[in-house]
Length: 231
Image (cartoon, rainbow, N blue to C red; front, side):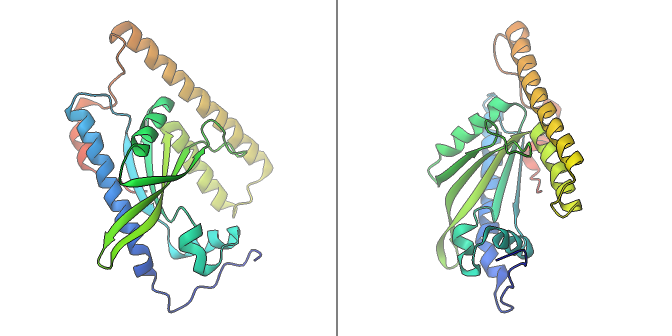
């Protein structure tokens, strides 16, 4: 199709098309915050730090569909990240704890897992992606949609947000010298994640009877539980 973005049908009702994704994202943001609260109320270590969500804009959808060679009428079937949930964790190990929690749920079906933590992208991008089928209850009945769950540490998220900004600053053609520096920064972020896990284990072994460190500052629990953040 080339680089030209798909031309959307002027009569296409984007609001109706995107509403099931909006409902799905809102549903799961609330569900994940509920899980987080259950961990805290039961005095258990919570691997979930921050839950955010987004639905792509029509222009973003069309741009990505063009790049992937997806026809307009196939967008809802072949574009898997229209609706997204991002879960940020403190430690790398928490990423897989959250992934296991999601895989065990009865209200979603795992369609695909992409582990960019163990196998980073050439750019240095690191995150765990789960593509899951979720049935949304709507006015017109049950509608299946695909949700993309991105699970990452704070360090991974910081790197990804900077890389994303740089990518769009240069229209996705990042100069080679900056690309190399981003890759170096990604390795530094990975080293930071590894060191923080090592520090956590050392503290737990010496001072906390081998139990994981609390994931929340007790003075901030009320805010974290009741505040739903979006990206």
